[in-house]
Image (cartoon, rainbow, N blue to C red; front, top):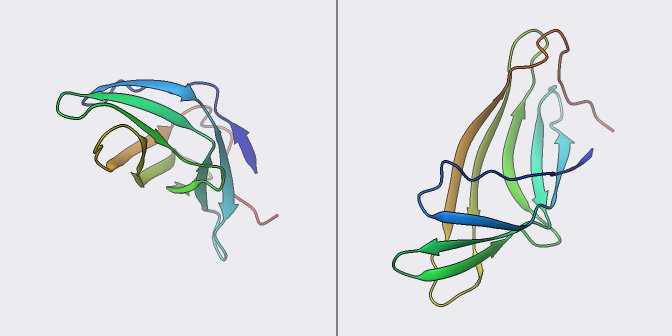
Length: 117
């Protein structure tokens, strides 16, 4: 399944971050479960690091493994993000570690799970 990302909000970042391209998410079924892996493609953003200055990062056309969607038939669905992003522009910019947990809490009456395609 492909999903267009409409907006990125970088409120929990240490450095000021600006989205250049929002990209898209692909969710792929994990065999033998109702969970899925998430690939993030075509996204670009910049950060302003106090040491390295402006640095650009992107997920590229082939994408990066962003994390796992843990399905739920009755409660909250969780997306665990654990990804490393390499710089695509800037001088001596460091790799970025993106770790975050998103909980989808609404609507609770509608289960969310991943089926094989």
